[in-house]
Length: 204
Image (cartoon, rainbow, N blue to C red; front, side):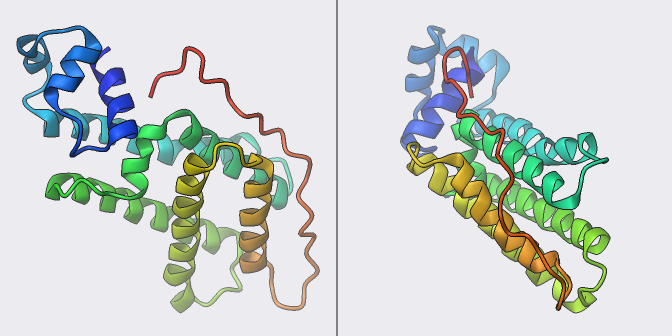
């Protein structure tokens, strides 16, 4: 309960504007009860960051493994759907995508996630686009990582936008990166199975 309320408040108000008083009031607990679980607001937000960092990183990789027998373009589609679906269901990850806390430990965790995402993107490029020169892999990994983060934030700020269009736009970018020069590529997105998730009963 405490973590769910804190995640919602951090997502709505930001880390700086959210106080311990706000969290205990929203959770219906006392400060001593909160401090039995967390040493401080920083400890609480770091706990949340670590949990969502791991879950967000795992979501597209799990989707990739589950679609191993499908063409690359389809596997890319399910990965993007899994990633954006997680972001939409857990708006707290706004803090993971762009740190505005002013806290050095929070900033370090956010940077760690960015490093992990970039490394994963580079590994996927090595596997699926072996024609790309090694010297270009890290910059291209950063292009994909920053595009994901930027569009994730954009989706949170534009909840009425069609998720399928967001997926299709990024799919087009990634396919353009991984397709060897001179090869034909079908940029038309497959019919997306993405459904805007209900927020009823969903906690951050």
